[in-house]
Length: 488
Image (cartoon, rainbow, N blue to C red):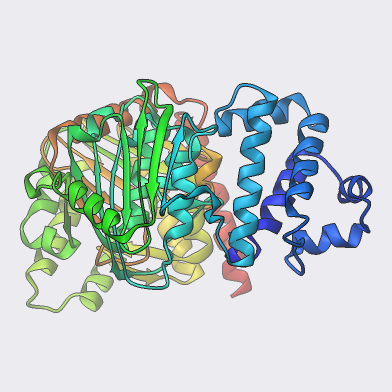
Protein backbone atom coordinates (compact mmCIF):
# COMPACT_ATOMS: atom_id res chain seq x y z
CA UNK A 1 0.00 0.00 0.00
CA UNK A 2 1.22 3.49 -0.84
CA UNK A 3 1.90 5.11 2.55
CA UNK A 4 1.12 8.57 1.09
CA UNK A 5 -2.45 7.49 0.40
CA UNK A 6 -3.12 4.94 3.11
CA UNK A 7 -6.44 6.58 4.03
CA UNK A 8 -7.67 6.87 0.44
CA UNK A 9 -6.83 3.30 -0.45
CA UNK A 10 -8.41 1.88 2.71
CA UNK A 11 -11.54 4.00 2.21
CA UNK A 12 -11.81 3.00 -1.45
CA UNK A 13 -11.33 -0.71 -0.72
CA UNK A 14 -13.96 -0.59 2.04
CA UNK A 15 -16.55 1.12 -0.15
CA UNK A 16 -15.95 -1.27 -3.06
CA UNK A 17 -16.20 -4.31 -0.78
CA UNK A 18 -19.46 -3.01 0.72
CA UNK A 19 -20.76 -2.01 -2.74
CA UNK A 20 -21.34 1.61 -1.70
CA UNK A 21 -21.04 4.33 -4.34
CA UNK A 22 -19.02 7.50 -3.87
CA UNK A 23 -22.19 9.43 -4.59
CA UNK A 24 -23.98 7.78 -1.65
CA UNK A 25 -21.20 8.88 0.70
CA UNK A 26 -21.21 12.39 -0.73
CA UNK A 27 -24.97 12.76 -0.38
CA UNK A 28 -24.93 11.64 3.25
CA UNK A 29 -22.04 13.99 4.05
CA UNK A 30 -23.61 16.77 1.98
CA UNK A 31 -20.34 17.09 0.03
CA UNK A 32 -19.76 17.24 -3.70
CA UNK A 33 -18.92 13.76 -5.02
CA UNK A 34 -15.60 15.10 -6.36
CA UNK A 35 -14.35 15.37 -2.74
CA UNK A 36 -14.86 11.64 -2.18
CA UNK A 37 -13.04 10.82 -5.43
CA UNK A 38 -10.12 13.04 -4.43
CA UNK A 39 -9.84 11.37 -1.01
CA UNK A 40 -9.75 7.92 -2.60
CA UNK A 41 -7.21 8.93 -5.28
CA UNK A 42 -4.99 10.70 -2.73
CA UNK A 43 -5.34 14.12 -4.31
CA UNK A 44 -6.86 15.46 -1.09
CA UNK A 45 -7.65 14.42 2.51
CA UNK A 46 -10.41 15.47 4.88
CA UNK A 47 -9.62 18.18 7.42
CA UNK A 48 -8.60 17.12 10.92
CA UNK A 49 -11.60 18.80 12.50
CA UNK A 50 -14.01 16.80 10.31
CA UNK A 51 -12.26 13.45 10.05
CA UNK A 52 -13.95 11.80 13.03
CA UNK A 53 -17.49 12.67 11.89
CA UNK A 54 -16.64 11.54 8.34
CA UNK A 55 -15.29 8.22 9.55
CA UNK A 56 -18.32 7.69 11.82
CA UNK A 57 -20.67 8.21 8.89
CA UNK A 58 -18.69 5.94 6.56
CA UNK A 59 -18.70 3.16 9.18
CA UNK A 60 -22.47 3.53 9.62
CA UNK A 61 -23.05 3.37 5.87
CA UNK A 62 -20.90 0.28 5.53
CA UNK A 63 -22.58 -1.56 8.38
CA UNK A 64 -26.14 -0.51 7.55
CA UNK A 65 -25.90 -1.04 3.78
CA UNK A 66 -23.29 -3.76 3.31
CA UNK A 67 -24.50 -7.21 2.32
CA UNK A 68 -24.66 -10.08 4.82
CA UNK A 69 -21.85 -11.87 2.98
CA UNK A 70 -19.68 -8.75 3.19
CA UNK A 71 -20.33 -8.27 6.91
CA UNK A 72 -19.69 -11.93 7.68
CA UNK A 73 -16.36 -11.75 5.84
CA UNK A 74 -15.19 -8.53 7.47
CA UNK A 75 -16.25 -9.73 10.92
CA UNK A 76 -13.98 -12.72 10.40
CA UNK A 77 -11.10 -10.44 9.40
CA UNK A 78 -11.50 -8.33 12.51
CA UNK A 79 -12.57 -11.25 14.68
CA UNK A 80 -15.64 -9.49 16.08
CA UNK A 81 -19.16 -10.79 16.68
CA UNK A 82 -21.53 -7.84 16.38
CA UNK A 83 -22.05 -4.57 14.53
CA UNK A 84 -20.93 -2.31 17.37
CA UNK A 85 -17.56 -4.04 17.73
CA UNK A 86 -17.20 -4.03 13.95
CA UNK A 87 -17.98 -0.30 13.84
CA UNK A 88 -15.28 0.41 16.45
CA UNK A 89 -12.73 -1.73 14.62
CA UNK A 90 -13.43 -0.07 11.25
CA UNK A 91 -13.30 3.39 12.81
CA UNK A 92 -9.96 2.67 14.47
CA UNK A 93 -8.55 1.35 11.20
CA UNK A 94 -9.69 4.34 9.13
CA UNK A 95 -8.45 6.86 11.71
CA UNK A 96 -5.06 5.13 11.91
CA UNK A 97 -4.85 5.22 8.11
CA UNK A 98 -5.74 8.91 8.14
CA UNK A 99 -3.05 9.78 10.70
CA UNK A 100 -0.49 7.83 8.69
CA UNK A 101 -1.49 9.63 5.49
CA UNK A 102 -1.23 13.13 6.97
CA UNK A 103 2.05 12.24 8.68
CA UNK A 104 1.09 12.40 12.35
CA UNK A 105 0.21 9.88 15.03
CA UNK A 106 -2.60 9.81 17.53
CA UNK A 107 -0.62 10.05 20.76
CA UNK A 108 -3.78 10.72 22.80
CA UNK A 109 -4.05 7.05 23.69
CA UNK A 110 -0.61 7.18 25.32
CA UNK A 111 0.09 8.25 28.89
CA UNK A 112 3.78 8.77 29.66
CA UNK A 113 4.59 7.13 26.31
CA UNK A 114 2.69 3.96 27.21
CA UNK A 115 -0.76 2.45 26.82
CA UNK A 116 -2.68 -0.50 28.17
CA UNK A 117 -5.63 -2.00 26.29
CA UNK A 118 -7.71 -4.75 27.91
CA UNK A 119 -9.37 -7.16 25.48
CA UNK A 120 -8.89 -4.91 22.44
CA UNK A 121 -11.68 -5.11 19.88
CA UNK A 122 -10.16 -6.67 16.81
CA UNK A 123 -7.10 -8.85 16.86
CA UNK A 124 -4.22 -6.69 15.82
CA UNK A 125 -3.92 -3.11 17.18
CA UNK A 126 -0.39 -3.87 18.36
CA UNK A 127 0.54 -5.30 14.97
CA UNK A 128 -0.87 -2.30 13.14
CA UNK A 129 1.19 0.06 15.26
CA UNK A 130 4.24 -2.15 14.75
CA UNK A 131 3.82 -2.12 10.96
CA UNK A 132 3.43 1.65 10.93
CA UNK A 133 6.48 2.13 13.19
CA UNK A 134 8.99 0.37 10.95
CA UNK A 135 10.63 2.84 8.59
CA UNK A 136 12.25 0.41 6.16
CA UNK A 137 14.11 3.23 4.44
CA UNK A 138 16.60 3.26 7.33
CA UNK A 139 18.65 0.65 9.22
CA UNK A 140 16.62 -0.87 12.02
CA UNK A 141 16.82 -3.51 14.76
CA UNK A 142 13.72 -5.65 15.35
CA UNK A 143 13.03 -8.52 17.74
CA UNK A 144 9.80 -10.56 17.68
CA UNK A 145 8.65 -13.39 19.91
CA UNK A 146 5.27 -14.62 18.72
CA UNK A 147 2.82 -17.49 18.92
CA UNK A 148 2.41 -16.93 15.19
CA UNK A 149 0.22 -19.87 14.25
CA UNK A 150 -2.33 -19.25 17.02
CA UNK A 151 -3.13 -15.74 15.77
CA UNK A 152 -5.97 -14.74 13.48
CA UNK A 153 -5.67 -14.54 9.71
CA UNK A 154 -4.85 -10.83 9.34
CA UNK A 155 -2.35 -10.86 12.22
CA UNK A 156 -0.46 -13.74 10.60
CA UNK A 157 -0.17 -11.80 7.33
CA UNK A 158 1.07 -8.66 9.12
CA UNK A 159 3.66 -10.66 11.08
CA UNK A 160 4.81 -12.41 7.93
CA UNK A 161 5.42 -9.02 6.30
CA UNK A 162 2.73 -9.37 3.64
CA UNK A 163 0.52 -6.54 2.49
CA UNK A 164 -2.01 -6.34 -0.33
CA UNK A 165 -0.97 -9.85 -1.56
CA UNK A 166 2.68 -8.76 -1.91
CA UNK A 167 5.83 -8.86 0.19
CA UNK A 168 6.69 -5.69 2.11
CA UNK A 169 10.41 -6.37 1.55
CA UNK A 170 11.24 -5.91 -2.13
CA UNK A 171 15.04 -5.72 -2.16
CA UNK A 172 18.03 -6.96 -0.23
CA UNK A 173 18.42 -5.10 3.09
CA UNK A 174 21.28 -6.41 5.19
CA UNK A 175 20.98 -3.28 7.38
CA UNK A 176 17.62 -4.45 8.75
CA UNK A 177 18.27 -6.96 11.54
CA UNK A 178 15.30 -9.15 12.44
CA UNK A 179 15.35 -11.71 15.25
CA UNK A 180 12.20 -13.86 15.07
CA UNK A 181 11.41 -16.46 17.74
CA UNK A 182 8.39 -18.75 17.54
CA UNK A 183 7.15 -22.10 18.81
CA UNK A 184 7.31 -24.34 15.76
CA UNK A 185 5.34 -27.03 17.60
CA UNK A 186 2.24 -24.86 17.14
CA UNK A 187 2.53 -25.26 13.34
CA UNK A 188 0.29 -28.07 12.13
CA UNK A 189 1.46 -29.71 8.91
CA UNK A 190 -2.18 -30.45 8.05
CA UNK A 191 -2.82 -26.69 7.81
CA UNK A 192 -1.74 -26.08 4.22
CA UNK A 193 -2.40 -22.36 4.56
CA UNK A 194 -0.18 -21.96 7.64
CA UNK A 195 2.74 -23.89 6.13
CA UNK A 196 2.61 -21.90 2.89
CA UNK A 197 2.34 -18.66 4.88
CA UNK A 198 5.41 -19.75 6.85
CA UNK A 199 7.39 -20.45 3.66
CA UNK A 200 6.43 -17.08 2.19
CA UNK A 201 7.45 -15.37 5.44
CA UNK A 202 10.86 -17.01 5.11
CA UNK A 203 11.08 -15.82 1.50
CA UNK A 204 10.14 -12.28 2.46
CA UNK A 205 12.57 -12.01 5.35
CA UNK A 206 15.43 -13.84 3.61
CA UNK A 207 16.36 -10.47 2.09
CA UNK A 208 17.09 -9.12 5.58
CA UNK A 209 19.70 -10.03 8.17
CA UNK A 210 17.24 -12.57 9.53
CA UNK A 211 17.45 -15.29 12.19
CA UNK A 212 14.62 -17.65 13.08
CA UNK A 213 14.70 -19.61 16.33
CA UNK A 214 12.50 -22.08 18.20
CA UNK A 215 11.35 -21.49 21.78
CA UNK A 216 8.34 -22.77 23.70
CA UNK A 217 8.38 -19.42 25.50
CA UNK A 218 6.58 -17.96 22.45
CA UNK A 219 3.37 -19.86 23.23
CA UNK A 220 0.57 -17.52 24.24
CA UNK A 221 2.60 -14.38 23.63
CA UNK A 222 3.15 -11.64 21.11
CA UNK A 223 6.15 -9.41 21.86
CA UNK A 224 7.84 -6.76 19.70
CA UNK A 225 10.61 -4.29 19.94
CA UNK A 226 11.59 -1.95 17.15
CA UNK A 227 14.64 -0.23 18.63
CA UNK A 228 14.19 3.55 19.03
CA UNK A 229 10.59 3.34 17.77
CA UNK A 230 8.09 1.10 19.48
CA UNK A 231 7.65 -1.95 21.70
CA UNK A 232 4.71 -3.95 22.94
CA UNK A 233 3.48 -7.11 24.56
CA UNK A 234 0.16 -8.91 24.00
CA UNK A 235 -1.04 -11.88 26.01
CA UNK A 236 -3.17 -14.42 24.17
CA UNK A 237 -5.98 -16.70 25.28
CA UNK A 238 -5.85 -20.44 24.56
CA UNK A 239 -7.69 -19.92 21.26
CA UNK A 240 -5.39 -17.13 20.08
CA UNK A 241 -7.56 -14.15 21.04
CA UNK A 242 -5.66 -11.08 22.25
CA UNK A 243 -6.47 -10.74 25.96
CA UNK A 244 -4.60 -7.51 26.68
CA UNK A 245 -1.90 -5.34 25.15
CA UNK A 246 0.75 -3.13 26.72
CA UNK A 247 2.75 -0.88 24.41
CA UNK A 248 5.31 1.88 24.78
CA UNK A 249 7.31 4.39 22.79
CA UNK A 250 9.83 4.90 25.57
CA UNK A 251 13.30 4.03 24.21
CA UNK A 252 14.54 2.54 27.46
CA UNK A 253 11.51 0.28 27.72
CA UNK A 254 11.96 -0.72 24.09
CA UNK A 255 15.60 -1.69 24.67
CA UNK A 256 14.64 -3.71 27.73
CA UNK A 257 11.96 -5.67 25.83
CA UNK A 258 14.38 -6.20 22.93
CA UNK A 259 17.01 -7.63 25.29
CA UNK A 260 14.42 -9.89 26.93
CA UNK A 261 13.28 -11.28 23.59
CA UNK A 262 16.72 -12.14 22.26
CA UNK A 263 17.61 -14.03 25.43
CA UNK A 264 15.39 -16.78 23.97
CA UNK A 265 17.51 -16.90 20.82
CA UNK A 266 20.01 -19.74 20.69
CA UNK A 267 22.15 -21.02 17.79
CA UNK A 268 21.21 -24.53 18.89
CA UNK A 269 17.54 -23.71 18.34
CA UNK A 270 17.89 -22.21 14.85
CA UNK A 271 15.45 -23.96 12.53
CA UNK A 272 17.48 -23.58 9.31
CA UNK A 273 20.98 -23.23 7.98
CA UNK A 274 21.34 -20.66 5.20
CA UNK A 275 23.48 -22.01 2.34
CA UNK A 276 24.30 -21.45 -1.29
CA UNK A 277 23.58 -24.10 -3.91
CA UNK A 278 27.27 -24.10 -4.82
CA UNK A 279 28.18 -25.05 -1.25
CA UNK A 280 25.56 -27.82 -1.33
CA UNK A 281 27.21 -29.19 -4.46
CA UNK A 282 30.69 -28.98 -2.98
CA UNK A 283 29.68 -30.68 0.28
CA UNK A 284 27.75 -33.36 -1.67
CA UNK A 285 24.44 -32.51 0.07
CA UNK A 286 22.77 -31.82 -3.29
CA UNK A 287 23.86 -35.27 -4.48
CA UNK A 288 22.90 -36.91 -1.21
CA UNK A 289 19.31 -35.74 -1.61
CA UNK A 290 19.07 -37.48 -5.00
CA UNK A 291 20.50 -40.69 -3.61
CA UNK A 292 18.19 -40.77 -0.59
CA UNK A 293 14.93 -42.72 -0.48
CA UNK A 294 11.51 -41.09 -0.60
CA UNK A 295 12.32 -38.01 -2.66
CA UNK A 296 9.36 -35.61 -2.62
CA UNK A 297 9.60 -32.37 -4.54
CA UNK A 298 7.32 -29.38 -4.77
CA UNK A 299 8.57 -27.42 -7.79
CA UNK A 300 7.73 -23.73 -8.06
CA UNK A 301 9.88 -22.80 -11.05
CA UNK A 302 11.72 -24.45 -13.95
CA UNK A 303 15.07 -25.84 -12.85
CA UNK A 304 18.23 -27.56 -14.05
CA UNK A 305 17.18 -31.21 -13.70
CA UNK A 306 14.28 -30.95 -16.17
CA UNK A 307 16.23 -29.78 -19.24
CA UNK A 308 17.91 -31.62 -22.13
CA UNK A 309 21.44 -32.97 -21.76
CA UNK A 310 22.59 -30.73 -24.61
CA UNK A 311 21.37 -27.54 -22.95
CA UNK A 312 22.64 -28.72 -19.57
CA UNK A 313 26.17 -29.21 -20.92
CA UNK A 314 26.17 -25.82 -22.65
CA UNK A 315 25.02 -23.99 -19.54
CA UNK A 316 27.41 -25.94 -17.32
CA UNK A 317 30.34 -24.86 -19.49
CA UNK A 318 29.15 -21.26 -19.51
CA UNK A 319 28.26 -20.87 -15.83
CA UNK A 320 31.00 -22.93 -14.10
CA UNK A 321 34.76 -22.76 -14.54
CA UNK A 322 36.39 -25.97 -15.78
CA UNK A 323 38.29 -26.76 -12.57
CA UNK A 324 35.34 -25.95 -10.32
CA UNK A 325 34.42 -28.76 -7.91
CA UNK A 326 30.78 -27.71 -8.04
CA UNK A 327 30.80 -28.15 -11.82
CA UNK A 328 31.88 -31.79 -11.59
CA UNK A 329 29.30 -32.49 -8.90
CA UNK A 330 26.55 -30.77 -10.92
CA UNK A 331 27.32 -32.95 -13.92
CA UNK A 332 27.10 -36.11 -11.84
CA UNK A 333 23.88 -34.92 -10.19
CA UNK A 334 22.18 -34.42 -13.55
CA UNK A 335 22.97 -37.98 -14.67
CA UNK A 336 21.76 -39.44 -11.37
CA UNK A 337 18.55 -37.40 -11.57
CA UNK A 338 17.65 -38.92 -14.96
CA UNK A 339 17.78 -42.36 -13.35
CA UNK A 340 15.97 -41.09 -10.27
CA UNK A 341 12.88 -40.29 -12.36
CA UNK A 342 12.43 -44.04 -12.95
CA UNK A 343 12.26 -44.88 -9.24
CA UNK A 344 9.00 -45.68 -7.48
CA UNK A 345 9.81 -43.69 -4.33
CA UNK A 346 10.01 -40.33 -6.14
CA UNK A 347 7.04 -37.97 -5.98
CA UNK A 348 6.95 -34.65 -7.85
CA UNK A 349 4.35 -31.89 -7.73
CA UNK A 350 4.95 -28.97 -10.08
CA UNK A 351 2.97 -25.75 -10.21
CA UNK A 352 1.28 -25.10 -13.52
CA UNK A 353 2.44 -21.49 -13.07
CA UNK A 354 6.07 -22.70 -13.03
CA UNK A 355 5.73 -24.07 -16.57
CA UNK A 356 3.57 -21.17 -17.75
CA UNK A 357 6.02 -18.57 -16.43
CA UNK A 358 8.88 -20.45 -18.09
CA UNK A 359 7.04 -20.46 -21.41
CA UNK A 360 6.35 -16.72 -21.18
CA UNK A 361 9.62 -15.42 -19.73
CA UNK A 362 12.14 -18.14 -20.60
CA UNK A 363 13.63 -17.83 -17.11
CA UNK A 364 15.40 -20.97 -15.90
CA UNK A 365 16.98 -21.54 -12.50
CA UNK A 366 20.25 -23.34 -13.31
CA UNK A 367 21.81 -24.25 -9.97
CA UNK A 368 20.78 -20.83 -8.64
CA UNK A 369 22.05 -19.01 -11.69
CA UNK A 370 19.42 -17.11 -13.63
CA UNK A 371 19.33 -18.07 -17.31
CA UNK A 372 16.90 -16.68 -19.91
CA UNK A 373 16.15 -18.83 -22.95
CA UNK A 374 14.73 -17.69 -26.26
CA UNK A 375 11.31 -18.89 -27.44
CA UNK A 376 12.73 -21.67 -29.62
CA UNK A 377 14.73 -23.10 -26.74
CA UNK A 378 11.74 -22.86 -24.39
CA UNK A 379 9.69 -24.93 -26.80
CA UNK A 380 12.44 -27.58 -26.98
CA UNK A 381 12.63 -27.80 -23.18
CA UNK A 382 8.87 -28.06 -22.74
CA UNK A 383 8.84 -30.85 -25.34
CA UNK A 384 11.64 -32.57 -23.40
CA UNK A 385 9.64 -32.31 -20.17
CA UNK A 386 6.63 -33.84 -21.89
CA UNK A 387 8.82 -36.65 -23.30
CA UNK A 388 10.10 -37.28 -19.77
CA UNK A 389 6.53 -37.93 -18.63
CA UNK A 390 5.88 -40.17 -21.65
CA UNK A 391 9.04 -42.25 -21.22
CA UNK A 392 8.99 -42.48 -17.42
CA UNK A 393 5.47 -43.88 -17.20
CA UNK A 394 5.99 -44.87 -13.53
CA UNK A 395 7.07 -41.37 -12.49
CA UNK A 396 4.63 -40.14 -9.88
CA UNK A 397 3.89 -36.58 -10.88
CA UNK A 398 1.00 -34.21 -10.24
CA UNK A 399 0.35 -30.61 -11.25
CA UNK A 400 -0.88 -27.83 -8.99
CA UNK A 401 -3.38 -25.72 -10.89
CA UNK A 402 -3.95 -22.28 -9.38
CA UNK A 403 -2.98 -21.80 -5.77
CA UNK A 404 -4.02 -22.58 -2.23
CA UNK A 405 -5.10 -19.07 -1.18
CA UNK A 406 -5.85 -15.71 -2.80
CA UNK A 407 -3.59 -14.14 -0.16
CA UNK A 408 -0.57 -15.42 -2.12
CA UNK A 409 -1.82 -15.11 -5.68
CA UNK A 410 0.82 -12.55 -6.73
CA UNK A 411 3.72 -14.34 -5.00
CA UNK A 412 5.98 -16.73 -6.92
CA UNK A 413 6.04 -20.22 -5.45
CA UNK A 414 9.18 -21.73 -3.90
CA UNK A 415 10.71 -25.18 -4.39
CA UNK A 416 10.73 -27.72 -1.57
CA UNK A 417 12.93 -30.83 -1.66
CA UNK A 418 12.34 -33.57 0.92
CA UNK A 419 13.95 -36.96 1.50
CA UNK A 420 14.69 -39.28 4.40
CA UNK A 421 17.60 -37.16 5.67
CA UNK A 422 18.21 -34.08 3.46
CA UNK A 423 15.45 -31.48 3.34
CA UNK A 424 15.74 -27.94 2.01
CA UNK A 425 13.79 -24.98 0.65
CA UNK A 426 14.75 -23.11 -2.49
CA UNK A 427 13.08 -19.75 -2.06
CA UNK A 428 12.00 -17.50 -4.90
CA UNK A 429 13.36 -14.12 -3.74
CA UNK A 430 15.34 -13.05 -6.86
CA UNK A 431 18.59 -13.10 -4.85
CA UNK A 432 20.10 -16.45 -5.64
CA UNK A 433 22.85 -16.21 -3.05
CA UNK A 434 20.36 -15.99 -0.15
CA UNK A 435 17.63 -18.44 -1.00
CA UNK A 436 18.68 -21.91 0.20
CA UNK A 437 17.46 -22.98 3.65
CA UNK A 438 18.54 -26.40 4.89
CA UNK A 439 16.04 -27.70 7.47
CA UNK A 440 17.83 -28.49 10.74
CA UNK A 441 14.93 -29.07 13.12
CA UNK A 442 13.45 -32.59 13.32
CA UNK A 443 9.98 -31.34 14.23
CA UNK A 444 10.03 -29.03 11.20
CA UNK A 445 10.99 -31.97 8.96
CA UNK A 446 7.92 -33.84 10.23
CA UNK A 447 5.74 -30.79 9.57
CA UNK A 448 6.89 -30.47 5.95
CA UNK A 449 6.42 -34.20 5.35
CA UNK A 450 2.86 -34.02 6.71
CA UNK A 451 2.22 -30.90 4.61
CA UNK A 452 3.40 -32.67 1.44
CA UNK A 453 1.26 -35.74 2.11
CA UNK A 454 -1.75 -33.53 2.82
CA UNK A 455 -1.47 -31.83 -0.57
CA UNK A 456 -0.64 -35.03 -2.48
CA UNK A 457 -3.54 -37.02 -1.04
CA UNK A 458 -6.29 -34.59 -0.03
CA UNK A 459 -6.11 -31.41 -2.09
CA UNK A 460 -7.72 -32.64 -5.28
CA UNK A 461 -9.44 -29.26 -5.56
CA UNK A 462 -6.18 -27.75 -6.82
CA UNK A 463 -3.97 -30.78 -7.61
CA UNK A 464 -4.32 -32.45 -11.02
CA UNK A 465 -3.56 -36.17 -10.77
CA UNK A 466 -4.62 -37.43 -14.21
CA UNK A 467 -1.53 -37.79 -16.37
CA UNK A 468 -3.46 -37.15 -19.58
CA UNK A 469 -4.64 -33.76 -18.32
CA UNK A 470 -1.06 -32.83 -17.43
CA UNK A 471 0.14 -33.87 -20.90
CA UNK A 472 -2.64 -31.84 -22.51
CA UNK A 473 -1.58 -28.76 -20.53
CA UNK A 474 2.01 -29.30 -21.68
CA UNK A 475 0.77 -29.53 -25.29
CA UNK A 476 -0.97 -26.16 -24.81
CA UNK A 477 2.22 -24.59 -23.50
CA UNK A 478 4.30 -26.09 -26.33
CA UNK A 479 1.87 -24.67 -28.89
CA UNK A 480 2.02 -21.27 -27.17
CA UNK A 481 5.82 -21.37 -27.22
CA UNK A 482 5.60 -22.14 -30.96
CA UNK A 483 3.54 -18.99 -31.47
CA UNK A 484 6.19 -17.01 -29.61
CA UNK A 485 8.82 -18.47 -31.94
CA UNK A 486 6.85 -17.10 -34.90
CA UNK A 487 6.71 -13.64 -33.29
CA UNK A 488 10.45 -13.62 -32.54
